[in-house]
Image (cartoon, rainbow, N blue to C red; front, side, top):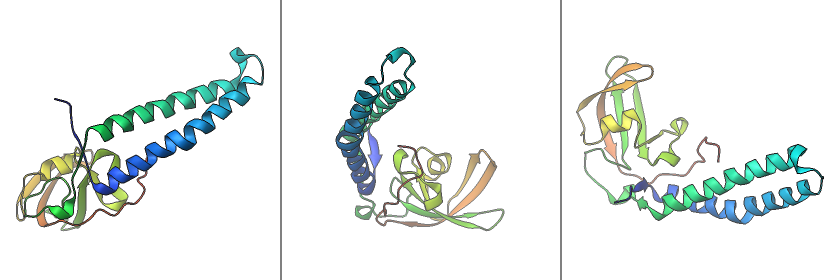
Length: 169
């Protein structure tokens, strides 16, 4: 069975819009850039042509990636979920046992993750440690900055507001 790609409704809408832009705006603009570069003469020493062809390859790769992920998308609306157990779509407030600092994370699909806006990928170490746990549970998370001990203070189910992630697309 093929792998499923969990995503929120906002993330799904973003990916569909991004795919549409790639197909209807970026691809035609790139074709025009290739056509113009061809007009500059010898293709073997034509930097504009090489750059346009490289961009074309990246656009086509992103189109294939987004089409595949959308075909295998498992859209999960956090507002339709409930309970105190952490799973995809949950907005989780945790308290760091050592510092007492609180942090709030929403567990989202990989392409939706943006730590600056409190969205972490379902595959991130913190999310993997939290999934399946409930309010009051303590988890130990190994991160690049060292081991953290977190206690789950709250689990909420609210819509994910779309804020453009800080990714190159």
